[in-house]
Amino acid sequence: QVQLVESGGGLVQAGGSLRLSCAASGRIFSIAAMGWYRQAPGKQRELVARVTNTGGTNYADSVKGRFTISRDNAKNTVYLQMNSLKPEDTAVYYCNADLGVWGTPRRDYWGQGTQVTVSS
Image 1 (cartoon, rainbow, N blue to C red):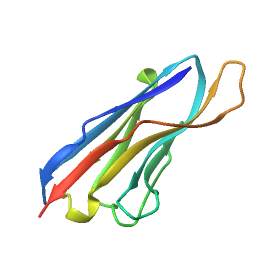
Image 2 (spheres, one colour):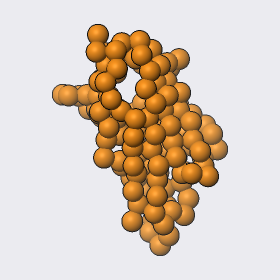
Image 3 (tube, helix red, strand yellow):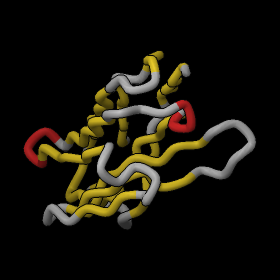
Image 4 (cartoon, helix red, strand yellow):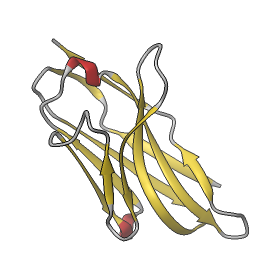
């Protein structure tokens, strides 16, 4: 009923940049917030950045000043611009959306994940 399709992951050298995109589609009534989480091997999934429908943002301390989250409400799409990447940013990045679908309660939806690998 709802799909979150991610793109933009890949392999990059330390200091490089990547841009992730995530588009939500389906019978969406409203989107309260969209964001990115990541999970490295052997670690818990953690919030990277999140943006609300009013433009409020929050970031993990580890990415502040390097990553920027943005959102195109008309396209139901969220972007994550990642600059000055470090090897410790290596993880699977998951798109998340807090949204409502016609006829069902609002809840979290997740993308399938995209791998980001930063080489030293």
